[in-house]
Length: 219
Image 1 (cartoon, rainbow, N blue to C red):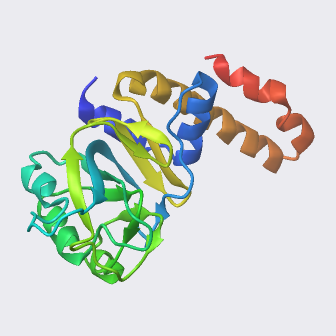
Image 2 (image 1 turned 135 degrees about the horizontal axis):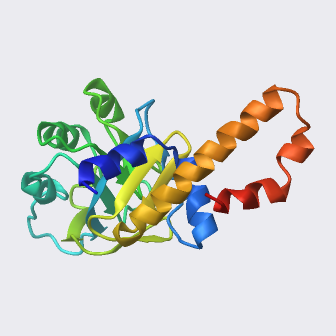
Image 3 (image 1 turned 60 degrees about the vertical axis):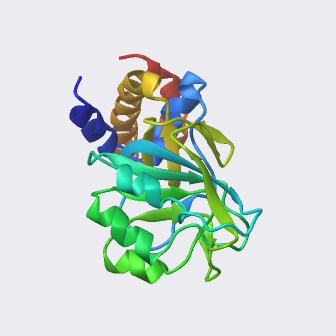
């Protein structure tokens, strides 16, 4: 299956459904606390991972994240940024404009953003823990990129799949994406039928009985 069709299938779902599929399969990936930092659209793509950490010396350094943005070559990238420090920004207006120019789909930050109006003004989606005005300069640096990172307790690898919407952010191992999508699509179909049944007057206690959810495993 082509990457484009895989991303299209993922984009047709929401984080709730993908989280449910991960639950059924016993897989990690759903997170808590990484929310949209403006009223931004859903993002779906492949992870470009970035690890940040505290700056421990006074030497000049390349601004964090900028080398990863410069290296982007495809239009499927979502920046997955770990290691944000409390109260300190690790995303801002200039980075947002650079990412938009490289057709990056959005950023998911285990940390904070500043200049959020700048990201909003160009329609660049940013998900994270919150907003600050305090600059990262001389406080936080980029330590690594393209390696596994911890995002709200979930390990995310380069090229894993990312979906983020108003309910939060979910990461799916690239090696498991097909089975997660297959199950998530069945869950979505089943849940649509359950909503229709309730609207038609069927007892919600009956519709939401555990046996109805267990039936999702049946194709």
